[in-house]
Length: 199
Image (cartoon, rainbow, N blue to C red; front, side, top):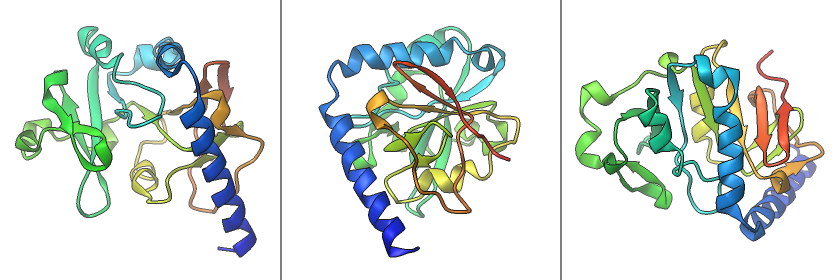
């Protein structure tokens, strides 16, 4: 990658982290953002929905997972495998989560090898996506590790990718590479931005 582009990405990532860390009222804004997500027509029609489980200063999804479970959605959460990829787990109770890698709540280790709990990425009807920074085109910047990049390339073309972010994580334009996946929508506390999606 060009040194200037990498420097821009590093600067945006640093600023976005600071913005998100300093964001006030995270709980209240998170409820508003996730509420907007759960009000989407795409959510109403989806049977199998992947929710990321928030860590640190991300938009908090954990408050709304019980509601999704209560109202009959098949809820799927990801967890980090040792090989650098995400595995998908069908969540039926919040009690099935424990603190895992990177201090992220993940499926309990005792349940991960249960074949009935495993979900193939092709089964996802709708996907929430975390990130460090986004732009209004739906471009996304993660932590640079690539967990989600690897997962998202295998999602079905008709399964919308919905980013959840605070408005302070939005930038005018994020540098992208050919392999980067654009979001279909970015939801913040200020509204829903229509992303470019996957061409």
